[in-house]
Picture (cartoon, rainbow, N blue to C red):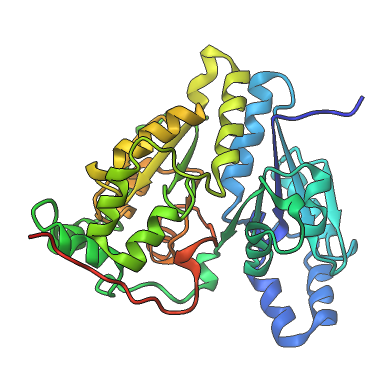
Amino acid sequence: MTPTFELVVCITSSALFDCSESREVWKQHGIEAYKEHQRTRVTIPLKPGVGFPLVRSLLALNEVAGKGLVEVVLVSRKDSESAERVRRSIKHYNLHITRMSFTDGTDVTRYLPAWGCDLFLSADEDQVSAVLSGTISEEFAGIAAGLVYNIAADATVVPLNSPSVLDHLINSNTSECSREATMTALSRVSASPVPSYWPEGQVRIVFDGDGVLFSDEAECVFKTKGLDAFYEFERENGQIALPKGPMQAFALKLMKVRTELGTDNRWRIRTFLVTARNDVGNVRVFNTLKEWGLDIDETHFLGGLDKTPFVRFINPAIYFDDSIEHIDRAKQVVPVAHVVYGINNITTPLQIVTTKSD
């Protein structure tokens, strides 16, 4: 009998493990040097990567349930010989990953529909963009995808004083928050480790709102017409559910897994919505979640405040956001996945209009 799972996660080797060293060898010296590098280090386990905490915590749910609720599939463009180090690393960390694809250069995204994938994590932006845009196949519909970053390999971090949409929100809401408050909060993020207030064995996942759980419809209004237009748009459409975003189906799948865990183990999955929206936009959000039947445990409407102090306290297995600026800040303290989707990821510069009410 073919096994069935409530949730299927496909992850590349470079998202599951830190493959930055071997990737650098490949970039500088070519494929043969890369293969030799892997052969000579085959007995040395790869270090955990950004996707490792999520995979480990999700697989642990199967032991709690006593059945297979979550399936993790390793997909890699490595050839079978070079992949030996990956397979040994999986065994080293006792990860129950039994299904794998090694394609020797073929695009792994072609096999995602065949695996019944619900969430795809990769360190390759082209792969994630292809899945989220659906340009290759309509079969990608319903598959969530996130781009993970290796902190050590990335040198670019958005400066705290860089101009951004956050600046516009703060400047337009001086009565609610100030630039100084945001800068002060962010400066405290890396001061000292946050003690864990969360129970051991809990999978915590943080979602952004617009462009992640929801489509970028409202974000497009803000980006092209300004903040006042966004407020007016939300008031007019407060009773109309937001269109589905790229992570909506995945969030619903998580809820099914939690249901299968039973009442006593419901606490083992906890979901968070952390959004830049404020009280003007929260009515439509709550109506949307209700219509979808999606139960999010915690909702945080920050009104333009930086998200990093909040996600740092939550200490999630992973945090999904469509804004590279939020990602660049948060990746210093928690595992993150960039949802390469929507207006926030259009490379052509947009003219952002800001207006103030009389």
